[in-house]
Image (tube, rainbow over all chains, first blue to last red; front, side):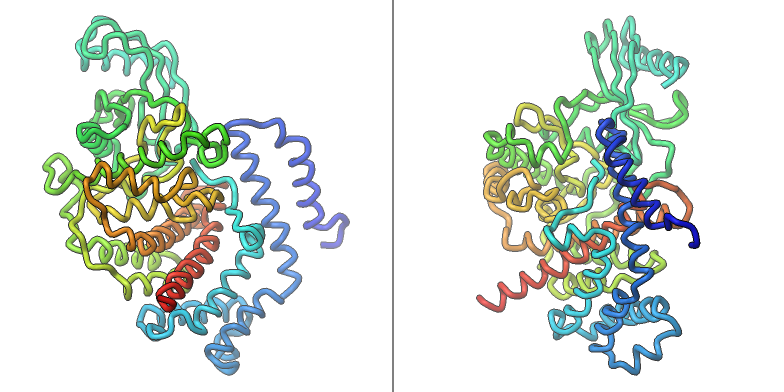
Length: 139
Length: 344
């Protein structure tokens, strides 16, 4: 990305123009489609921020470290995304096998909350703030 | 709907209903169906069993593939059974099961008036004076539906009723998760809790399994038709109640715990009045958790239809991303249930 405006600015500019000048003129099925387009663009713009900031995935890996220990997280893969995928698979399998049956609302709940909140910060921050479900919902 | 198909449908209607004259003067595609298409037909009918009918809805498959849902033939039979049981559903009129008229099976039913739009039903202040009545009416509708018990030969496509509906649902949900390319530990966690807390089974009855705000029509504060029967099956009656009340189907109107449209007490009161007895309402939170896990898993499956390239759609893509909302709901709902238990 060598040219200005950059990709994030381009998406944001397109989104703003769409919301200001196009969306208000739509109704019915086209309004529904327009809201979906705006939502997809806004999510994509937020995720470009995260690509630049490894904090989100690191917070999840720290959560896993508190359950599995630093060493096991370090061994889980070469790069963060791969680690996250491996660790999620391990945890899913262990849950199904009943490893956490006696303490489902214990530390594993805390880790899953971090994992889910980080996902929501990207896909729908309003849900975290005010339980606002992403719109639109199909009829 | 092109003129040729219109004429073919009109001619078929004529012979099916014994009319002297049937003309389709207009056909408009109604909104809100990813898997099905609904066409509002303007009709002129003289003679036969639909004499004088001016409008009807033709329901058929959309171009896109159909998932695990029932086809139009099965849906017509379900609708007929619901109608005979005294439910408020669009009266099913004629079925074309072969696909020889338009290329795919379809059926024609009465039009239900009003709107199914969840935004409007959960937010419009004009509906406020009617909310008590509406929630009670929905409770009565559910109780009427749940009076239908197996076996019913015309519903043999539903298979045998499960001895333990919750166990069957849990195993279906595990297989949904297993079909996804990624792991979803929060959904696994919810499923494990559902498995460990499974209630004693109650006899399975006919359940709609998608009875939620958005799937019924309302006009002048009254329910005019329960729609979208393609997921119906034998199950625990509380599965319908849990699906209706789950937070993810309140469309942001959380305080109205019955589908975002009314109070839980009113829904339950209507149900009890019609059923003549009360189910164990204390089990509804369990079924709400199950509903939330199910919607989360279905959302991911829909997203996967897009991701896999099978069917590109912005709606499917965004639906997949919604699953995280359900995951957080599951974590919070179960935590709440466990806290309440610990304090008792």
